Amino acid sequence: MDPDAEVDVELFDMVRLYKSGRVERLAGTDVDVPAGVDPDTGVTSKDKVIDPDDGVSARLFLPDISRFAGAKLPVLVYYHGGGFCIDSPFSPRYTGFLNSLTAQARVVAVSVYYRLAPEHPLPAAYHDSLAALRWVASHADGGSGKEEWLSQHGDFGRLFVAGDSAGANIAHQVAMSAGLGRGVRIKGVALIHPYFWGVEPVGSETRDKEMREKSERLWRLVCPETTGADDARINPLADAAVPLRGLACERVVVEVAGEDMLRERGRAYYEKLKESGWSGEAELAEAEGEAHVYHLENPASEKAKALMERLVTFLNRD
Image (cartoon, rainbow, N blue to C red; front, side, top):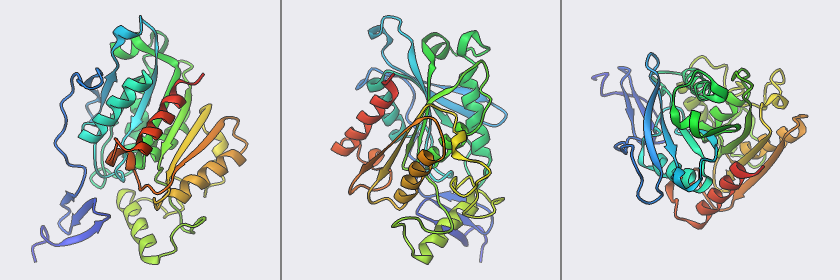
C-alpha cells in the first residue's frame, strides 16, 4: 500500500497522520478571516509578524478608541486551542470571539499564532507563546517594542493571559515562567476548559481504558519527548518540584463545562492551586450541560454570553 495513503494514527477527529509522515488536519482549517474593521463591534484588527525565523505571529485587536478619551486599556494575550495541532487566531471562530471580547472588555488583545504539532512538536508552542508574551511586554514603560497599539494604548499594569483548551495549558505554562522584563507582571490568567490530563483518573473522570489511552496517544503525538501523561506539562498537579504556588499572577479564573471530559482536571487544578500556598485569588465557574469549548461552537447561547460576561468582569476588576 502507498504509505502516503495508509493511515498511521487518527485522533479525536482533529488530525490524521499517514505512514509517510504526511499530516492531514480534519478540523480547524476554515478559510482565514481577513483582518480589518469588524462592523458588528467596531473593533479593528491587524496581523503582525513577531519572529520571522520561527514563524511566530499574532492578530492584534483594538476597540474603538475614540470612545475612551485616550485612556490606557488592559492588555490581553490570548492562546487558541486545538490540541496543539489545529486551528489559528485567524480562523472565523477565534477572530469572532476576540472581536467580541475586545469590544466588551475594552482591551488591547494579542491573539498568538504558534507553530503546530506534529510538524513542530512541543515545546515549540510553549517557546513561541512565551516569545510572543515577552514581545508584548517589551512595549512597557518605553521599552524596545515598536507596535503603536501596544505602546500607545496598553496599560501594562493590567496584563492578562488567557486561552482555551490547549491554549489554556499554554497560558498556565507561560504564567509559570519568570522573566518578562521591565518589571512587567501578569495580573491575571483565565483558563477556559484547560487541556490537562494524567495517568490516574481524578474525581468522576472517565475510567474507560480505550478513551484514556487515546488521550495519551494524542499527547505523545504532540509531545514525543514526553515521559507520559504525568509529565508536568500535561499534568501540572503531578510534579511536586514545580509547585503551583509559583504561578506568577494575582488572580486566576478556571472555566469548566459540565459535559467536558476535561472538567475534572480543571476542578482539580483550581482546588490544588488554592491549597498550594499561592497568594493570589482563584475562582471556578462551571457551565452545566455544556461541552468542551461550547462558547466557540455556539457564541450566541445564553451560557456562552454568561462566560463572556465573566471574562469581561475578570479583565476589568481592580
